[in-house]
Length: 163
Image 1: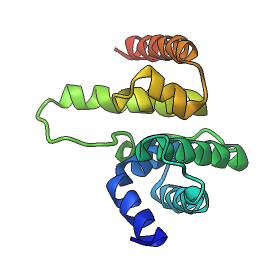
Image 2 (image 1 turned 90 degrees about the horizontal axis):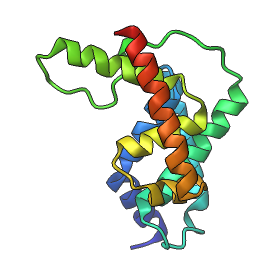
Image 3 (image 1 turned 120 degrees about the horizontal axis):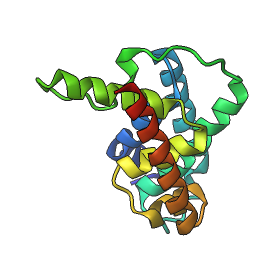
């Protein structure tokens, strides 16, 4: 398998990583598509240097998060309303309307976090262990634990205020 085929296979196998990050770090579909393309471009540029010391998904998270955070800093974005269609990453078929609304509220609050906090909570929600989150984010494991605790409390406080 040549370099291009290996890259395409890796992207296909881990496309969800890119989709989740683009959903959390953008407000509309156009920005999401632009960020998706930028992440794939950055992954391609870095692919030759990927040493396979980390799992492909871990490496992709790191590149994608750094790209998304870099794009946020470039855009000097004004805060605007969160569209309902962008709030839930993986919508599920459920009859529990109340639970759906709570999930939408949670993702709305996650989108209001700063760039690093978004990345940490996204990785946590993906089921990543503190060590993996530390490797991806460049923080220490204890720092990840501390920040994650603060993020959870911040989100809990916001959710309680709305209840």
